[in-house]
Image (cartoon, rainbow, N blue to C red; front, top):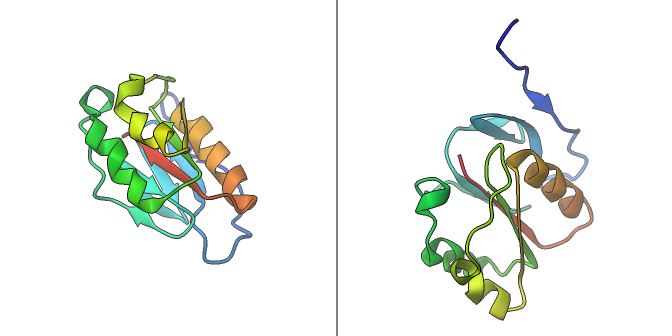
Length: 129
């Protein structure tokens, strides 16, 4: 169909009982086949659907410090179709705690999360939708 994109399928979840991105589009992501059309946080063990910044411009320090309780090794921030970089002051508490933070487009964040999760890393991805 003209003007309509097919969902991007990523790969089969070979990690039993772990969250993995199975598809994504311009306005949604799918985790284990479940579609989300709002901002979420995903770890291998949990999906937090209450992480609700109002887009990239609405990100605050609280949105990042809230992630400290999960104790990830690395935080990936999916910023939509374009890679955007939040001001470092917003995530300074994470970096002070030795947690890496990387910002990338949502498709790249989904792929990177799947790879790191497959390596049993303590990864967390925050997706802005």
